[in-house]
Length: 338
Image (cartoon, rainbow, N blue to C red; front, side, top):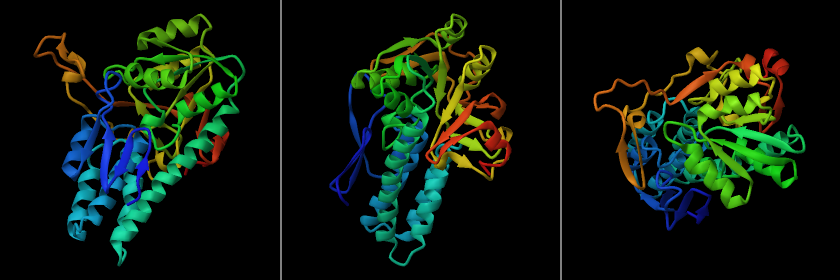
């Protein structure tokens, strides 16, 4: 396989490497991934994360395993194991559906490689189209608020919501970005702040609970978020805390936009109630862990509720920015996402 490089994925000498996103921003550690079980562990530990990137890493690993003479039956088993690793992010399922078709080909080893590389190339292109379409909605002098991480760390390209923001900044439209820390795993504080700093985009990091006061003071002009799954009626599953921002934005009459690739659409899912929401470990809420080690601040036996995502109803969304263009609430009502 050819050498491949994205912000957080590498293929060198037919071996997959991932940038350990749990080690950022303190260290840039690249981890070799040689098996399905290793990748599942990295996905579940959020060493590799972001709905598009999860799907791409799974596709690339299957293609590389095929090049190592792994048999079709074992690849099929690995595909199903990967499919179950993150139940909410539909990009993973959509990518693996295409890899399954390639696996059925007579020359499945070459077919898997072609499909995996095509998925990476498509993701880069669709990120550019999302950024271009979304930036048209950004007004000059904007102060934009974003949640979680939706940049190059989460995709093969420039990102989704963060791609829009950085593209608009290069156009001179963005005054400042408000970055939610994104509890409990701090993807905003650790990852989005790191990405914006690397790009030179002006930002200020805030605790999630500070967003309401900023909106009340008139210091937020729009909210931009990504998505892990978009239902046919426009409901969106995204990182926990997104729904609260949408409610706040509606109260304060602030536009709330979702930027995502078409691989995030699930036309077979009727609405948000049908989206499976992953429940994660209590330790993520009772303390914090990172490159520095771990700290626990809650009682050891504290009962915890820790959903990884929440669902934002379509009625609270001002627009869905896809690689095909901007979808309006009226478009969604007319069945544009079905």
